[in-house]
Image (cartoon, rainbow, N blue to C red; front, side, top):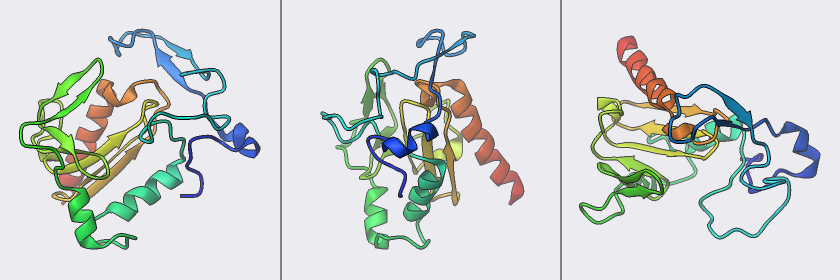
Length: 184
């Protein structure tokens, strides 16, 4: 992953794509987009800044995201041992403890593995075959998932603030699951 980091080197600033916000964060279907390249602060991602958490603020490319997914696919050529990948896809929270996000609250059925979120019990907006799925997303709508049960994986990069909770992201995943299912 040669193009992933917490800032974009100056020589690559021209490669940083536009970033958009919807008209209403709490109503993602409300029409209207505003370009917000200076979110979450002016010059974001253009220079190194101190960070309070290592889990947010990465900038990446589609090529690097695909490399990440390939490195985590069970049974494929990876940098990790199969037992490490299996552990990464195992719930690391205590029983009954679920992922919780600000403004979204608790996400019953969703928990953490060592490399991202896990869907233990698909919700009404997840595909029914998503049980066991490892996933993660970024604030700009970058998201990926791996479904060991179905043998599929996906990457989506939207550049839309909070796109990982936008209805199109769930529809895209449902359509991907259904397309693979029909193709078998």
